Length: 263
Image (cartoon, rainbow, N blue to C red; front, top):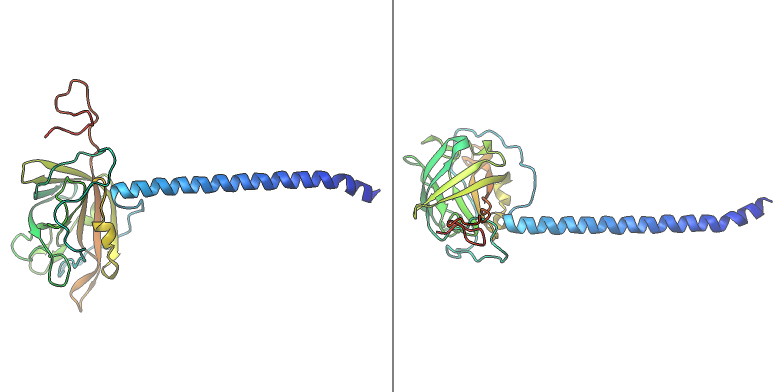
């Protein structure tokens, strides 16, 4: 009797097992497709904006002395960056060197000087004299062009006290950054991420790598202070992206069909 019952149940068990196995396969494939789609979406977004989506790291309040940011730089490639393709989604401006920087939420207003490369291959930093303004790395694009424009400034120093970027770590996602250019136009960006990196592992490709969008990187020192080398052990990098291009309005003479303002 028991053997007969087992014999009758065996085909049903086999069918149930097959159904469960098929369901598991479908769920696995569905999950893999979802993961692949999410990875593709993140890759496209990171390619466009120039940084991966990641939470801002906690930053340490700055001590009161600094030798300035030592920032690796890629080989000079000239002021212009090629577009990576695709329809314009941001307000794009022509080449024009920056003149001044304003970050209203942290009270920053600074003129901008031009910075090049030092003999050791790192980016020049603003001098620790006078007002110690922020500087624009002139081998990056100008703010408003497609690609990353890189600005550097001191957090503080013995000579000048608090630097232009002393409060940089107070910036939050969505904060506005305005760069006035020599042609009289203003490039407007919003903060998307604030990160801290050990100077020994500075993410050169992430900071200087090409982006479809006009992007901005603000770089200064941060983290702990090394009294032996008299400098900070980390770099703080703020990532920001240009505002989206306005949608064209019928009958608006200030907008083109693709949504870019007429200059």
